[in-house]
Image (cartoon, rainbow, N blue to C red; front, side, top):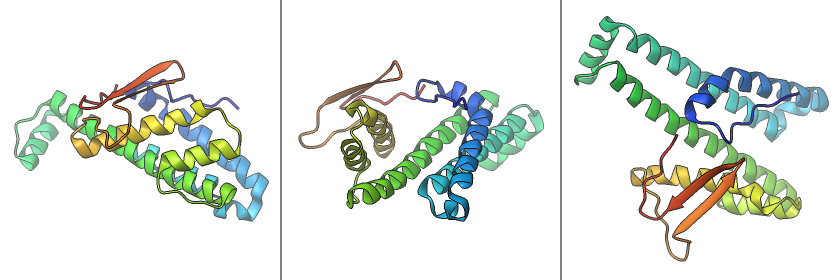
Length: 198
């Protein structure tokens, strides 16, 4: 089965690929269900992938709603009245897209955090308190390349920037600059700089 590689996509490419991503997720869940039988509902992979699919489908519904609002002058005016601001098609799309993008990143991050904690506890007997520590524990226990945890670090930095109005901040002895190359795409985080989402 061919699976969608989302690590090197822009936001618009990701959204365009969501229908295929949902199909891929459901196919993999069906493979797990066939393999695990009635125990599938207790498998963290099966549960997490179901939750991710619901989030992706929700994102598509939100985009459909935003598209309907932004393409209808009457709805734009109704929306402007509700939010008590002067708005136009571009402003509606910008606000909703930014909100949706941050919501999807946060939700997927939380799901991966839970998944990694469960996996770490199962494989190592420890449930660490950070995604990075859990990813590192799994990576070491399974002898995976160290670069495999870069995606979790990049996601963690991105999500943490939401606490700081989109600015990357480090504490204590953390490196002031962190760079990752994930699927040929650079991700650079520098203390005090804005984290830009493409």
